[in-house]
Length: 458
Image (cartoon, rainbow, N blue to C red):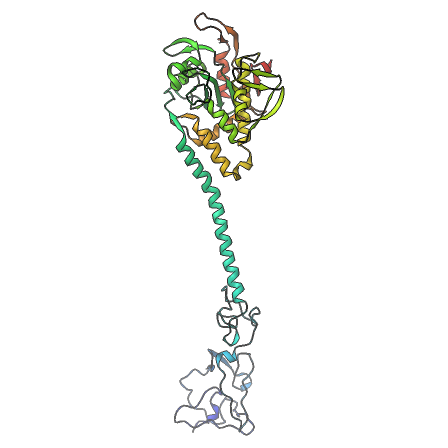
């Protein structure tokens, strides 16, 4: 039996050499219960009968419910067949069939393509174009937002890198400016970290012109950071009568005159039985320049002074002073009723004032001030070969801790402040019975917080 042409699915078109599909007068193709035109159906065609090909898309399933074969359009409705005598309209292009949607509204059931400019695949429009091929209105703002985001990220990265690189670069630069000296001994190490801070009265820098030649140590401070316990800053009087290795007994500042920093370190180690881990020496000129670099300091003295040797003129009370006055404040001793002991207290006050000013958080945002401060400080510093800027920063924090409410400041136990052994004139005799135990307690952090063995502690 010849197959009824009307049994073909409606979306199939006649092949070359085949008769055209007849159309019923009422526009409906009659199909038998078994899907044929009423006769015995021919063997199934080679093409899959369960799926048909859409004219402009992928395969869609054939709905055979109720014995009626029909295809579904993209909208889910059966296709319509034009009545007899009606000519089919030309097939619409893909762009004409695409639903019209605004650039900012997704078509129903679609998801965003995920690209930043225009509409992406799956959102109802061609990537980068609006319906009909026009550029979508949202494309430029999308790209602008992306560019702005990139700019913000770059600027943020530069700020972060700058904040990190600046301190690193500053430290590297400062390390290169430090003057190192072979000062440390090969003595056995002791607990904690010990800093020896010496204030040199060398006139070689030309700041002080009083006819004095050579060099002495006006200031000798031992800063101890124990493994546990209290941090201590102990000032050793420059006239302390001690044993100097290879030179007998003399004032401790003579050790620097005899053998410079190395001999001073050995002398302090012999006196305290503590190994010196870091040596830091500050010249006279450093006080004036550093004070000016931090913008001046606030100092206090409770009596009037008019000292010709140091050129200090002071009215009792507290004042904000610059470098020149601060230098005179730290040097003056002849007008001080306690001589070197009072000078030691004032020098400690000055160093603490400088440290407090330099530690202000606002200094972080003042690169020019940082450079000026580092330049002034490193120009007058001498440190041992193993000490760098990081060690100096730790020293500064330890100095601040020692001067805080939980730290210790003061002097070693003193037996006689006007000791005259006959060969060196008036000197300071440290208590031979108490001094060893005192420095052992300093080393181990066992001293009680506060001021010890000074005029202010009595």
